[in-house]
Length: 101
Image (cartoon, rainbow, N blue to C red):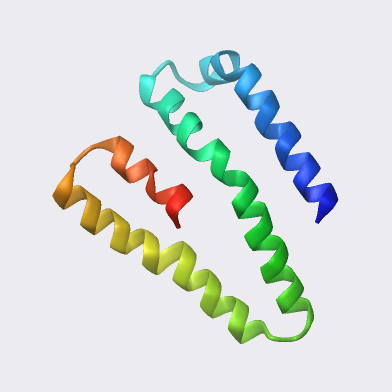
C-alpha cells in the first residue's frame, strides 16, 4: 500500500505541476482544468479504497468487495448525478461526485 500511495502522490504532483502542458496535448477546454483540480485530490482516497478492497478480496471474500465496489462506484454516483443535476445543473456539481463517492 505504501508503494501505491507514493506512486499516486508522485503522479498527482506531476499532474499539478505540468497541468497546463499535459492538457494542451489533448484539449484547451477550461473544464479540463476544473476536472483535474476536483478529481486529483481524491485519488489518495481512491488508492486506499482499492488497496483495502484488494486486501479483502485476497482473503477470499469476493462477494463483499463486489458489493462495496458497486455501492460506492456505481449506485452512489448515479444517485449523486440525479440529485445534484436537479439542484444545480453544472459540470462542477457532476465532477464533485467523484471525490464524494
